[in-house]
Length: 297
Image (cartoon, rainbow, N blue to C red):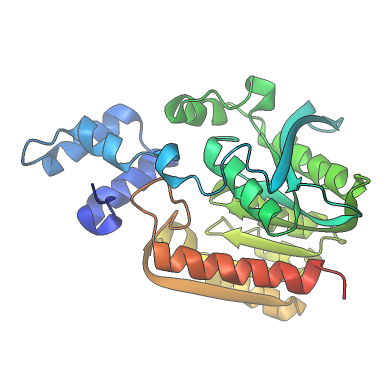
């Protein structure tokens, strides 16, 4: 069976699903408003299931792939939640130190898709560390709806400190070269932006369709930025002109790409919002950016 794409759904339904994913409406609100799109034997619940992640079909680098090694670690975060659990992936048999990449998840915690992203980076020669912001609430629960509900309970001030602590832990690992970058998606894109304002020694930051910091924080950014935008994503894109102007005023090195016709979440290959061509191009650009700024000259 061919995989469904965004083209198989009404744009109004996709916007409604985006509101549900980001907590603007609850499950009942989505089902009630999606009912008008339930035609031809489909139900609103069936539409929700069709739009929701399918981790198995999207896995690129399986757990146990002989090219990489993985481990689960606990990191100290004294200014945040106390302890943060994280997933680490790196090339198998790597000798010497590697550039590090912090991988920041969407607003569901450290799910199988983000672990796969970390493994993809390991195949490309990076030491990847993916923290789980849901650690203080028991960690990613294995269910996307439950994960979203838990996410709303987090103390975001402490969570931001957890990611700062994770970046420090990655940089300080004996198998890390000390050159680190960050890549984040949706919520994680916002975290990547935030870290760029907080870590003056950050080597590179790559936010995918993430919320921007306040314009006045642009002057704090010392790392080069590579920013990916979905073409149909007014919720995120509306704030870009103001932040872009602030980055230019501050002299921050930045590159921004908008992928026409794509939906928020286009890089996430577990859902129909995935756009294969845009995702491939964005990922190639991301890897090139990390090679440029994190690999030894």
